[in-house]
Length: 210
Image: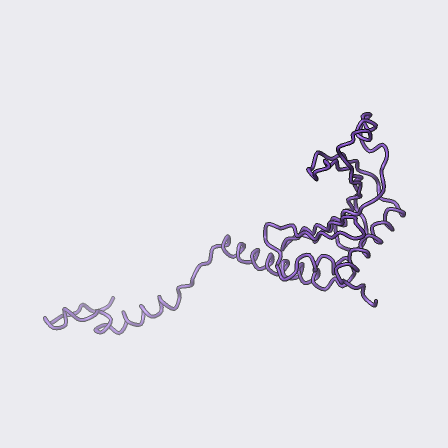
């Protein structure tokens, strides 16, 4: 056992480690032996945050280097804006040859960049209910027919299509819409690509290699 200390009045107010070498040594060893414990939950959350950040950067980089016509259309719609975490829709509207084209681009940091192109077409028969003939005979309204092409990966491949008829008054007041989903086929795929080229030419977006 350590020998007892006989303290003077002055020594009573000194730090114990100044008087006992063994105490000072032990204190140092205790401090050296301590290690900072990290919560496994915090480590997991930090790792997950890093992975999400890396994925987000990689995901958006892959979209930015899509130099196809469809990738360029998407980039044109975004302009100088950046994708958001929750996602946003960016719209381009053009009238070409008296017909309306509308491009909607939905994008987010962690999601894909989806193109929705409204391409005008001639009258489409049998896309809604039995009262179709009634609307054809109404004099104070007109119809807009178009396809809504959905390209989920901005790669020029149609994933889904809607046939749409919109009803408008002569005063250009929107009255309603009828729509019908149809299965993509080779002919409609070609229609989508031609419509995309028409819109791209109008807004000054050139095909790669053109």
